[in-house]
Length: 519
Ligand code: 9PG
Image (cartoon, rainbow, N blue to C red):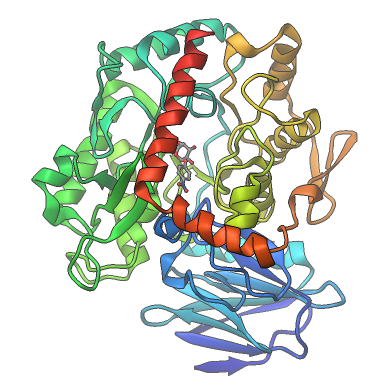
């Protein structure tokens, strides 16, 4: 263990150690928690332990399951403390497989396997974070080259209820709105693991890409190549390609689509060959923008074919995916461990999903879960990850323009639109059928906007001649006590039951089918 005094003000140092301890002169007033992957919480909080988030069977897909029960303030790779005078001390790993935590008056960092470099800086918040980003850029061969795309994505309106007919109609009706990419999301594949067109796409995926290209845009596609369900042909034919736990059972990669998820072992040579072939296939169909999702699965704890640190295993898998799709493809990573993705993708989702509601009381308050879809959750975590924007394009998820298909207030819709401008990553899923002429003009000027943006504070920005303040999304709700805590436990338990989630999914898809008929 290396114990060192913090650096002088406005200075930073880099030291090599497996475990580092900084003795703080006084207890800080707040702690910057940096969650593991795109959807995990990033926020400044006080030092009170956060309750364990629920349902616990979703831990593998929402947070780093290795630290799910850590009650001290902690974070993946980096953390920061703020003292009463507003100065910030940042401790951050310059390698993968590292975690930090506050242990009373000591700020500790630890590599899971072996030693690595630590970056330590003290000074103004924006300065220390940008110095850290600069050092990360050097270590992870970051070359930020691609221009920011303007994307229409099928997820946040139709969800999985997409089919060939409705997508063709939407692509036609988008008219001359200035989108660069039309991206087909979840719902086209046979199964999670079997990445071929399902019966809703009888003309096949190449025909779908052709249709998009005929509108003058590039074609985008969503896949989750590092997970599979047990009923997939992939899992049935190659169970040996999947990650195991310490007891030799298949490790859980979470639960979604009414099924248990499993993780591909990205150190297995045959699995890597399969991944590379899949990427070449998707490019051959004509898709040039790839949103690869649920990527955390490559870095979950477990037993692998080759005994390498889990995030190195993930990063090697990502390299194979990148090489096979080609440097000319636009590569967006999602549900992805943050630091191990740097330098290998063009854009990274930096927050949880938005949704048509501001906040779910059930999820955020009763279940202490800030990682589930919700507009407030998405804004909160994205704002706290803006420091990554010097390293790659950061995707804050989509903005809404229509009053149909969501229950957001005008003010909340505007906040999401402004967040997209701050990130310079513009996307929506709104259906052209939903947009009034006014909505279309707002969307058009959003897509064309090239305002000058200046950060004024942690949550405040100057956008052209307007000031924007995102602080209404910043605070975390107070954890439940008494009766509400009891209800929370019950909801957490019920919500973790597979059958209950299946029924909810079923209800969701029925109401989407109804909405489609009414378009
Ligand atoms: C498609 C979607 C969209 C979306 C992605 C991802 O259970 N979860 O924690 C969970 C979080 C996010 C999520 C799905 C499940 O959404 O972020 O944009 O592509 O997959 O299924």
